[in-house]
Image (cartoon, rainbow, N blue to C red):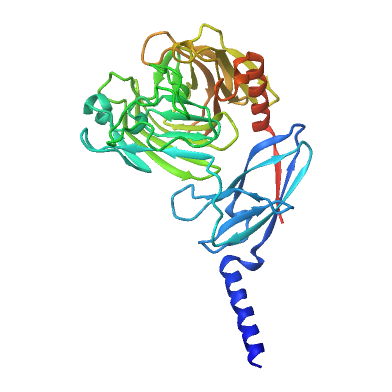
Length: 427
């Protein structure tokens, strides 16, 4: 009887431990079907919370393949209310095939390889060190020329995946720059600051991870945006010598940062574009495996004659812009040249734009507040999001990008990957 009592207690302890790390009958199956004719790599899969069985907060997803291999995933809280809204992961699915996954809920999530990141830091004065932040508000008179110093690490947030990195000039300029990467790991948190914690431009020299590789100037960089009304082009924000922003209040927030997905939000309140005033929103997202990021823009206060301009810096190339049509979903605009600093390396730059909103392309003037930029023209409606992608393909990340044909094939395939539809069934 004593022996039986010990056995019973042991079994009860094991059951208790199992119940602490599992939710029992909350297990589900996820069935992904690739309906396209191409193999999909690192295809982004989003499953909204309502599609899943109710799970007690505090549990994390564990997604496994048939043979038990783990698929890294994360839960995203998109509205900041403290409750996750979607399950996000990436998957490889061969053409015309089905991938079956098991979903369990556990207390202790595994440590997945970090393949995306957002870095943001600020100093409160010229003589204080930079400290990390997840949000910030910039008023019109707080731009760096008015302050007399640069408050932001790397001039604003930087974001990256295992292929490429970018940075946004949150100091009022709102252009997007490019970090070329030579390695799959995430670059150090100290990029843009020195040993004393002060802001320092230490990323225009080659490091083991890579470096900043393009000159942005008064362009909007790679994927930045503005508006066209008639023949006039209006920049979102200012140039580096201006002391007063044309946006009354710019608000930045990191919405989610995890191993397979990072997303940030910019809110531009009272953007003075000539005699007009707009409210604009920008969401910038990145996931593993692509030399690109996704940008989603919406604007309110429109009068009906505006065209959204998505920009691509052309300050270091004499080559014309090339236009490609990809299936029925995307138009690609791209350049390929030795268009890095001092024309040292080959670099392919591209915009992948939605065909249903596309209305041609153009080139900004060589001088002025919105200049040295090719742009794609996109139809925009009141407070209706428009999503597009911006890609940067550096030869030091993949030596194949030295060749224009190789780069073109990569961009075509990337656009096809993004256009491909995956059927998601939850059982």
